[in-house]
Length: 301
Image 1 (cartoon, helix red, strand yellow):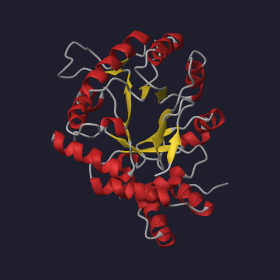
Image 2: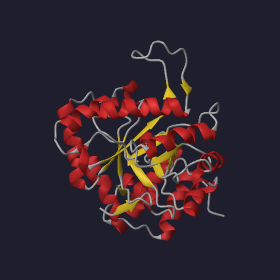
Image 3: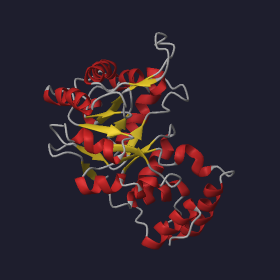
Image 4: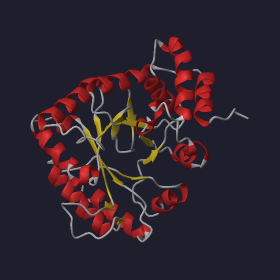
């Protein structure tokens, strides 16, 4: 699989990223999670995306146990994690309401917890999970800059930031932000027009696209857009070696000039392999626009 350079210091990621948001949905054992990680590695997917809040703060712990089952596995992977979302749950009954906290001190505390749970001495890419409207950008950047300086993270970035928020935080960073991880898929095409992807392209920042299959809504027969996409995919499939709708959806993302990295979130190993196969599909321009038209229900003007 082709590698993507994320930063000037040589950090590279795989073209697809394995996401762990729903990792615990099937209640896997550590051995099963370890197998998924090894399947990813065999398929060339070396970048693993997680977050402190995933699985009500349990996913990082599971990943740490699973990684420890294969000595040396962690060194073959790039780990992305996120912090800044804090919600009431069984392990945190003291919290009264869900909130964001992207102050530098809080991000440092979360990062140190992630290092401990994941069983590693550094995170390859650390993201602010959501914009915090009460944190000054210079405070957030101060925390990230300290983590970069002491080697606990190789790169910093953000998730779900708009253009103005990204610009503001960037102005206080000692090292350029490496990514903006955003919702981007055929049922959410706004990043194409709201300036987010234009900004990434202008700055040479590689975006990451979470929920590239719209959280499964792409296959919902009750969704008019999904039905239109299924019809178009059926007509396009013979042109692309029998590609499935999900593979065409990945190829649609990969074709955008900002070159986003899809974050695949399946718990089925065969779907990991199927997603990777989509990396070989080069959509013709008219077919890309055909999928866009089906997704939006509007003809391209």
